Length: 124
Image (cartoon, rainbow, N blue to C red; front, side):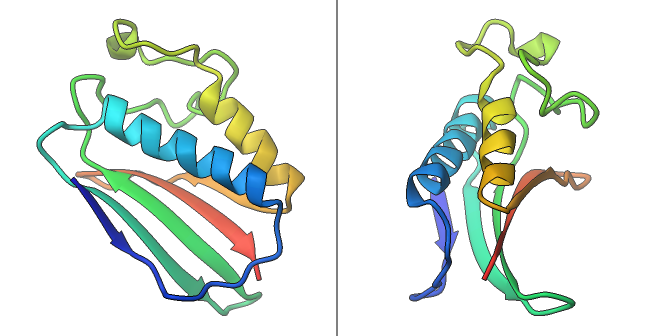
């Protein structure tokens, strides 16, 4: 169910423990809240303009929990009304956003018309 398109080597200067927590949460959310019969895609590519950074995306189709509210998704204790019956505290993305900022990265919610997309941009 997981499809990964990752370069063999992607050097990055960051706190690896913070990166692991962020990635674990993004993948856990994609598994919990995404469509169970659709793939979760993880991609990593290098963006060189205007400043070089790695863009890591976690992409999944929405499940029964629906689409997160773009204005609230990183808010403390935010849980979509349709996701209330799924275990969680509503703190995961809030904490991940804070960890990303702490290491000089950016975490964004960038949905398309068919997919939930979370994008982590890490300076090279």
